[in-house]
Image 1 (spheres, rainbow, N blue to C red):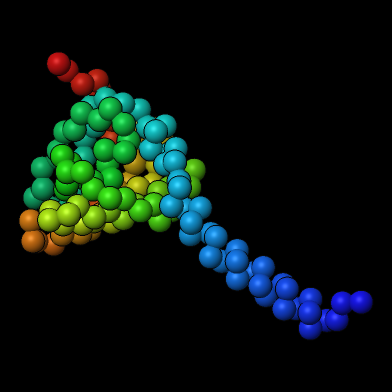
Image 2 (image 1 turned 120 degrees about the vertical axis):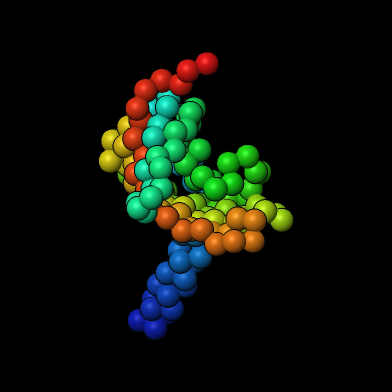
Length: 137
């Protein structure tokens, strides 16, 4: 016969194991939401007066993760991987780091918040990215 204390201890141990297992599953995320964004020419509008819109040719929504480190190979850690929002933290050895959250409104419109360090200087901004057409050659 199993006592109440034994059951409580077993339940506590299972809860502890689940708590440690949850972050590990987040690290193996697939970022499917970003893969569902439409490829093409996107316009990035930073919510800061005086900043002109940037135009980007995007073949994959993952391009939005490292807006201030676009050509750098960085290590990534997926913090959140949901059907309409993702958050990724990345580190670029000798180049800086960042943390980006992307929320999908449609496959052609996303909201982006990012912050980090690039070339020894901090950056932080919120932006809206909208697909505006096809990429020209």
